[in-house]
Image (tube, rainbow, N blue to C red; front, side, top):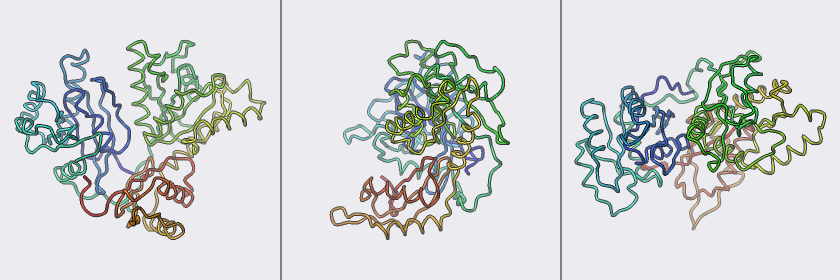
Length: 447
């Protein structure tokens, strides 16, 4: 398991809307930072571990520096703290636009601080851009990338590793088990689904404010609890509403906090109100959890009035499976946060999912399973060429992340990748957690 506290820190800074969050998502290869067209969406620092060529570091996404923003002073303080703790800074500018006074001001700050800096010119997917302007910042050779398309990000990652001058990370097979930390659970769902009531029942106290008014909880709140000898960190979040129904700044920020809570959780508990049924917003929450790569448990709350109707539970379960095919691995628990019905079962499922997202696949066994899968069903040829999987290794956990080194990633059809995923799930009894599979070309740099 990667110990984030021991990783070198790489901070991403720059003006609003230059693509900092998109770059972070591209480098870590999953959705951890919100990406919107509106400038200034990122307010707080967002952390995510990044692994490249078996080496790891901690990326920090920061808010955009602009004195036109009403939160500018708070954002500037967040950015300054991120720079202070960083071992390396990625200063991001928009390659399509002329440099601004803000760009030059940040560059002067970087030079004064003496921090190692890599200048990143993002949004450079077009060949018709003027590349000479960015050299005026005096921060060395710029790296022209496109976070949206992935162009140049492999070279940037190589430069990060080289600048940090890190030793190769220890293979997961050889790492010592870290001290057990609490399993981090994000309680998510639409407003008034009963999230705070559930947390209060688990705590045995009224620590959370409970009200009939949707949206009472406006920030993510962490509380630790021990149940059945296992420690849990419960992250109660504001209700996630459809954007069209967010008509106040407070609820907009609450939605951002809820997404941030999901990004740092190990398992998300999606709470549904039994009387409300499944909505499109619930499906978006499932997708958000899936994109974040965390485990998922679905809780159908307020079931105390229907506890003696097993046929209705079967019907609701069937409807959920049909409506959420992408979350077919997620356990479903019918419960009541008010009375405590099946609360022990909910946390038993959470613990089981938590154990699976922490699964370690021995490299030798992993490669044997891949070889057996290739033998039983060889990949189809594409224009006379056939995919070759040369080597497989697990590079991360929470969730399990497997990298397949291949001759050409473009030769792997999504259906064959799904076949490999199903074989690994079966071989390692991984049925209740997401599984990430990344294809990388064995020779040369990724462009």
